[in-house]
Each structure stands twice: as C-alpha cells, then as structure tokens.
Image (cartoon, rainbow, N blue to C red; front, top):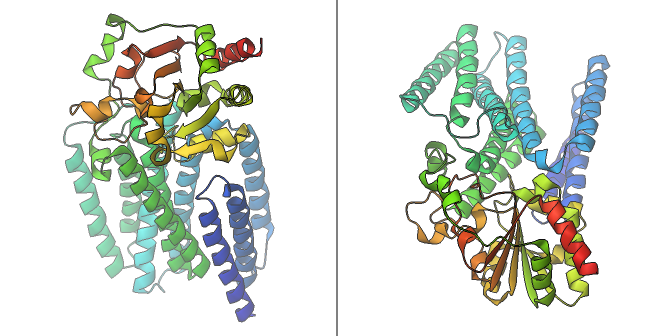
Length: 455
C-alpha cells in the first residue's frame, strides 16, 4: 500500500510540474490547468486514503461547500476582477496553512519535535502575513481601500520592531513548545505585519504584490507540509513559492525596479503635474477619422491595456482586427508584461475573445517593429506606452521597459479621459502632434469604427 501511495504522490508531483510548464504559454495554458487539477485530485484522494479517516462527513460537507463557491465564482467573476479573485485565493491559501499549523499544535501538544515546531512557526507567520496582506491588496484593487500608498511616520521602525518581536517569540516557542501564549502572539504580529506590508504600496505595483503574496502562500503551504509530514504538500508548496518568486523577479525587471523599491517606494500617488491636463491641447479626433486611417494602413499594431478590460471591449477589438485583416492589413497585438493588473491578465482577456495566439507578441519580440507600423492603436493602455520612462529621470516610471508605440507613424489612443495611469504621472504621448485622441468608452468607440469599416 505504501508503494502505491508513494507512486501516486510521484505522479501527482510530475503532473504539477508539467502543469506549471504548460502555464508558461497562452497556447498551452488550458492544458496546464487540466494537468494541475488532475494532480490536485490525485493528491487529495491519496491523502484521504493514507490517513485512514474514520468519518468523512465534515470533509464531504467542506468539499461540497467549497466546490459550490468555486463554481459560482468561476462563472460570475468578470475578467476585470480576476486580480482581486487571485488576491483572495492567495489570502485563503495562507489562512488555511496558518489554521492547519494551529490545529496540529493543539493535536500534538507535548509531543512536538524541534523541526516540527519550527515549521509550525514559519507556517503560522507566513500564512497570517499572506492572509491580511492579500485582503488589503484585494481592497485596493476593488476600490474599497484607497489605492494610493498609505505611509506614516516611524512606519519602517514599527515593521522592524514587530519582526524583531516575532523572532523573539519564535525562539521562545522553539525552546518551550508548551508556551501557547507566544504562539498566539506570533499570529497577532503576523496579521498586523501583513497589513503594514501592503498599505504603503500604490496601485501601480499591485501586480508585483499579487505575485509576491502568491509566492508566500506557497512557502506557507510547504512549511505546513513539513508539519504534516506530507511530501506532496511540500512539493506543491515549493513549486508555487518558486514560481511566484520567479514571476516577481520578471515583473520587477519589466518595471525596472527592485522589490525593495516597490515595497518602500510609495509609487501610485498623483504627480505634481497631473493637473496640467487642462492646460495643454490634444488632437481630439472622431471614430470616422480613425477608421479611415486604419483602413488605409498597411501595418497596424494594437496595444491593449487595463481600460480594455474595464470596458469589456475585447470582443469588439477582435472584430475590428478581423475586418482589417480581411482587408489586407497586417495586424498584431503588442502585450506588455504588466498590461492589466496582473501577469497574464491581458493574454487571458484576449483568449476569451478567441484571439489567435499567433497575433500576440511580447514586448521584446515586437518593440523594434513599431517604427515600421503605420498606426499604433492603443486601447486603454497608459503607463506601458509613456515615453517618460525613457526620457524623464525624475519620473517614477524612468527606466521601465515600455512599448515603443510613439515610434509608429501615427498613434490612435482610445481612452475615457486624460487622467494618469496607476503611476500617477501624465503621459506625454497624449500631447504629441501625431497622436489622435478618441475620448469615450472603448467598446462604443470600437463598435463605431466597425460600423464605418463595414460600410
């Protein structure tokens, strides 16, 4: 029996790894999800069998309730709310790890080995930090909490003090596992630190926060695996932790910033020049002007952004692209690594509209092509096309790799207003002579262009 369980866990681990591998590409992401779900099913069934559970009543009730909630969320949550949903899932994963650690502490009271109690402390601390930090991230993304950074005097000192207290309490519990008061103190400290970790981070950096908390939820799960002596939980948690860390590094490189700068940089406040929008003139054009330019172009590059998701305009955009391609226009999409509000958000959004993966190009693959484009059509993007990232050393975006949309012969930008992006700084591209601004709801604007192109 032990051999069968071991082989089943090995199969589950292999499927998890293959699932992650397939998630690295939009073409294989669906298969990656299917492999990962199969791996999780195997892990759950084997774990329940291995532990010889006498009463499955509560487990079955939990599975039914959890599956029902998951199914409802999967069907009801809009694509624009996926980042919030991921933040919540990260938080619930951390909360589960912390609760399991506490439950095992109560179950094994008086029989705790040093390696087990250390794993419990780590699981409890990281899990609780992930829980409250994810709730704050959800609140900022949902608009329940002000998205701008919230900083106060002695904030860093307070963080250092609380972390030092955690280390002291952790040492005390390790030496004397029977000291439950210190363990509860660790829980309280971690819950507070989770809040203090996220509140000084602005909306511009929420994608990085989400991937960081995702990594933390994996680390908490891995630590819980050591507590339970469950190999597959250790492997699964380590995979999530490592992939989340790698994704965080990729996001930081895409923004040309370090993780320390993101945590302490307080990016996301309104800039001093954000009020200058009403003092400078832009080239305000109509959908008819844009349709004429698009129809006459030979090469068009589409730059989608979060505004596209907000307007739910992905289907209209793809219909427009199909019309242009049928007219002989060379069209493709340029996807920035931080387009939307989380990694891969834009790819999933466009996949929902059945956009061919062959039309999607990452920043590194397409940036040199903008200079050959007749038109760059920007739908809802802002910071990722801001030339200040290349030229203004005082800008919080400076050094961030951007899409070279401004190098096209003409630029058409569909946007509701001249308001700045998540970084809080104005976009100089809006005021360029070759830029045509079309104000209004992106979906409505695109539908007008479609009607004009069909006539």
